[in-house]
Image 1 (cartoon, rainbow, N blue to C red):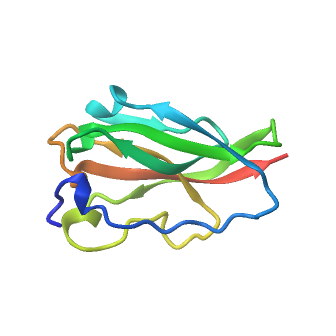
Image 2: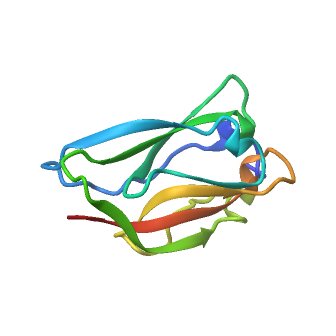
Length: 132
C-alpha cells in the first residue's frame, strides 16, 4: 500500500466478545481533532469498534470513531494501557494490532502532522477494559 490512502485499509481483526454482554455504542466526532497531530480516544472504558470517513480517502477524512462498551456496567475503565508503535505498519502489506496480547483492545489513535496518508497513524492506544 506504500502508506497510501484509506482505501488501502482492507481488513481488521476483532477480539471475540462475550455474547452475553450487552453492548452500547456511540459515535465520537473526530472530524476536527484528527485533522492535525495528536490523539483521538474513545471515552474511558470503551473500545474502538469502527471508523467512518467522508467523501475522500485521506486520514483527515475520518469523521467519526464508533466506540462501544458494556451497556450494563456504569463503572468501566482501562488498565495496563500501552501505545503500540505502528509507524511502519502501513509502509507495505501488513497487519497493525495491539501486539501479541489478546486481552487488549484499541481505544485510541495518534497521528503526526507530516501528511494525510494512512502511514501517518503512528500509534494505537491499547488497553485492557475492566468492568465492575
